[in-house]
Length: 443
Ligand SMILES: [Fe+2]
Image (tube, rainbow, N blue to C red):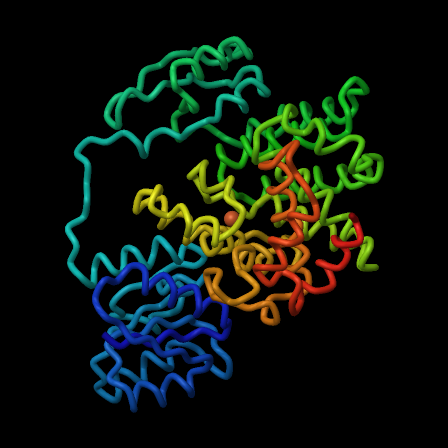
């Protein structure tokens, strides 16, 4: 099957291409076009079966491509993949085969492939999973109570009310559920998730002001709370604004923490692995950009926001603890096909989630998309080598790798050993070189 992907953004084309290769088991050839003119040439010269096009293109619009297909009698099926809905485009896309609404590219392509290959829709009769949303237990502890009933999931068709609205939820309740293997409770989907923002913000303010809590612990605890919020509400404009404002408040604190004295020695006892890893990466990348002479509030914000969000679509806990893709490959046999798929798609899925959020600083999406690339081009999703990633990505990747190594090796951590291993993998080449040297001088 020959598929033509048309978009003015190379990254978007790469993402669609990557996902199609994953979703379609039959052999496919993909062609890329960045403008309507290029598309028209390819449509005439290649035997295109499927054409996936954005509406806004360089020098024109996607409806001209669609018109071209119809007027020349080309057999290609046309799919609009845009943030514009075809029904809002004055009939220009009447009769098209399918449409995908950005940023939900992953969902849209899955549905497209199901339609193309006539897959039987997997429908579980009477499932109630759409009617409830999970709320992490830790978030419930922080909120104390919420103005809606809370349910426990017994099976996809059975949810039982276990806590009444406004009933207090304590750490003792949390521990009781955890002991019973329950990590999330549920609320009905119609619950207004916005109502949790104000109590959560208050709890964050209180935490930040608390003089009994060390700076490192404040950072870890606030990350845990915000991550609970992300898991509950998903990535929304409001969540991102809350995260950004929290990071801005944390920046002043970072300067007060002395890396060696305060941080990694006792970090393991302070919170969840993911929160510890985030805080450590936040600190290390701040130190690195400062030593490189790139220190600015906006650079730190980009790095820490990307560190916060990089793995939010990764649900496999053991995958979160991995150092990098090489580490993943060595353990791939331990993961289920779904876990592998989730891991391989998480940079793309997370980037796609952010595409619709306003005010996310530029470059954050690139840092996220590139955070599993490796110096020799054997990472994913795009196989970029040490010269093809951005210099800021190099800081991001190396600070993440160093943070995870420190956490995973704990008391056995040795910087010289880390550097030797990193060098063997090429982390001292191309755009990694300058950052590697800075870390070397930290010995
Ligand atoms: Fe990741």
